[in-house]
Image (cartoon, rainbow, N blue to C red; front, side):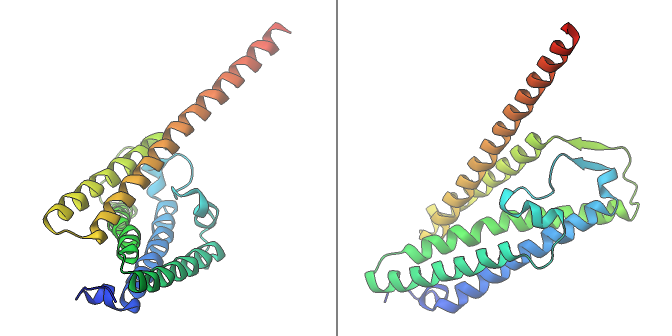
Length: 211
């Protein structure tokens, strides 16, 4: 067994329970936020594209699907992965489980902070809390805002790991940073696709004019 007194690492079940609860909460709050957004908040805050940023779940969130086979498969696979890593870590005396558990759990702090902000804001807008005007968020901006938020959490976890040496925090820092990089790349790729479509449209218009 690994030489640790942390009950989150000594036993398998606490980590699985916490991860499962956060993952289910993430999906449930995404559905809640999407419902509130469609119920009226979209008239004040218009976001380009899907409410969900992760392409894998966009179809389910766009259809407000409460029971998602994709989500269930992902949850089962991560539980199996954590179980295998816990067994491996305890037998080989390596911190694989601690690192991956942190990589899964820590980004949920950033995600849930965003969910809570959205739900609070959308409920206020739908209750006519005095919000005036309309803001339109292009997809690229939404993705880059998400990226910067994740970079901030990565920095927080990294600084904490300097004072409290922990593979859990290191895993969280690396995971937040990598997801932030992914969202930044999504934003750049989306901008390039928009420019390509605009160029094609402009070229088609010129051809039609010449003919």
